[in-house]
Image (cartoon, rainbow, N blue to C red; front, side, top):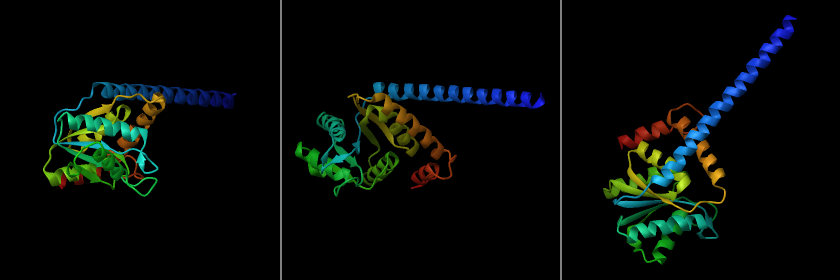
Length: 218
């Protein structure tokens, strides 16, 4: 009898655990998705010293559709006089050319003077995109930037920029990908991972908090 009662209690505890876990996860994904979409819809670039274009995939040495969408937004901003300098950020992915090299080639082909397009060709993550671009900004004595990326990626990019101390606005690509639910949920996971890194709660990941302190000290 006692054994049956213990088993029943364990079953109840297990059900309660899964129920609470479900509620917490649902709440997290719901609230974070709202923040992602809200930032996407409300963000707008403001006049700045430079434009930072975050990298995307390269296809056979040419910009992928996603990269071209970002570059076209950056081009519109530049032509509108929102910033006089552009940083293209992205390391080498699949292929011999870096994302930054491919982006610069595209912008120059569209009439942007080569001397105003600055290469950041080492980054392999969003954090590195912004940290390494920040170093260029510091070298050039620039203090403000417009971040250009896709809408679903804007919220995380701005949070990272804020943590690095970059005074930034954002001009999101307004096109909606066909699988927007997938990209939004993926960003929710990426934001959770970033928070673990930021607060040092996952010792197996890079210590973003240390990087942030180093960035502030430089």
